[in-house]
Image (cartoon, rainbow, N blue to C red; front, top):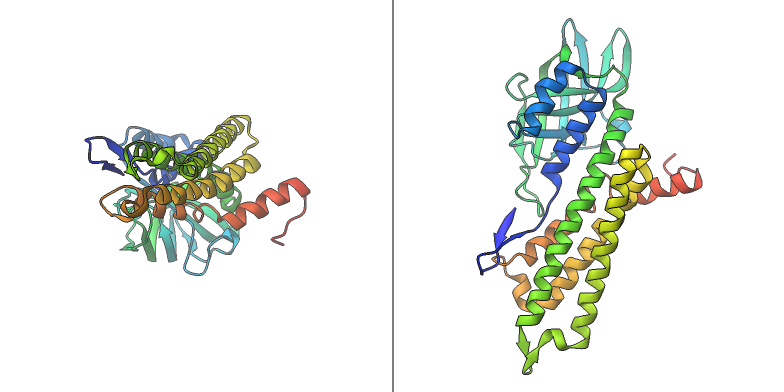
Length: 313
């Protein structure tokens, strides 16, 4: 994730997606999993011995999680999984992850459930998906064809997957928000350094009023986004996270892209160079507006919580 700035200093264009997988997976297992699942999956995650993925979206299913079509049929002590998943962050590298699937058994008739799918236990095809941002995260498409999952890998109870994954997405939204803050802070730091070093017309460009205006606007956005992220983190501890995490994710990702855009303006031509971090931050911050619910979806979630009226139904 890092890149050298030419002076031996490592700069981080923070893309939160891999950490977001860890937070969602560990949070869900900790909340709904068995003690055996916590021992088998959460502890190795926290020791950085295993890498996770979260598999929700499908070729025809994005924001509307309730429309997931991937199917899990109970057969004895196994579930048989069939379907396709898309935009699986960490999918090419992960050892295991959570898959959302429509479940059919004697006690469940098509409701969604969550399953822990292990690469070395369940056979499935993973195909890399080339994306314009967060290119280091191993984004993948999955195909499941009669893929068997041990029944012991069901998280919680059948039919509770929609509620579980929506609660788990709060972890992801907070993580994306704080990753956006990190990227924005990096863009701001680079811009301050550049404004103090770069000279035009015989003076530092930081002495020009318009450049100072850019730096001030960037600083305000970074500080506001960080404050909203901290507020959302506190709400997670209090169990009232849905609105706060959506607000943090909405504002921080939008603000981070605005900051990256201003950073590109401050840097001028060098900002386009692929051997300098600004262009990567620009791409990655634009990408933050999409995962864990787009800007538009976050807006509708917040509006529903404030007004008590859903625009989605």
